[in-house]
Length: 61
Ligand SMILES: [Zn+2]
Image (cartoon, rainbow, N blue to C red; front, side):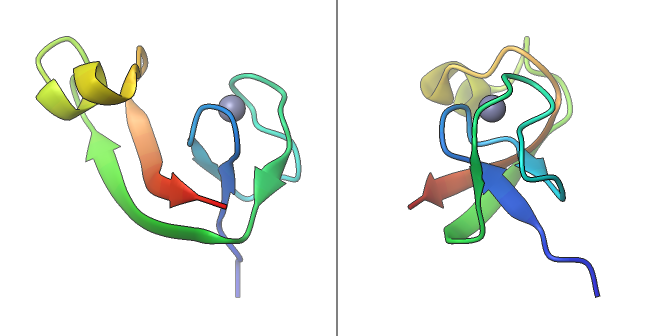
């Protein structure tokens, strides 16, 4: 089973120890996520400061 992790800096979801987007450390301690399909039209993306499409955790510890 794959363990999903979330970046502590930009909240991107990944299975790696390091975030593929910003290179920061990732955490297994996260809650909820959103899938951004079109960040240019997504209000959530704007609120969270997301500038790429993908899966993002709502809360990362
Ligand atoms: Zn990141």
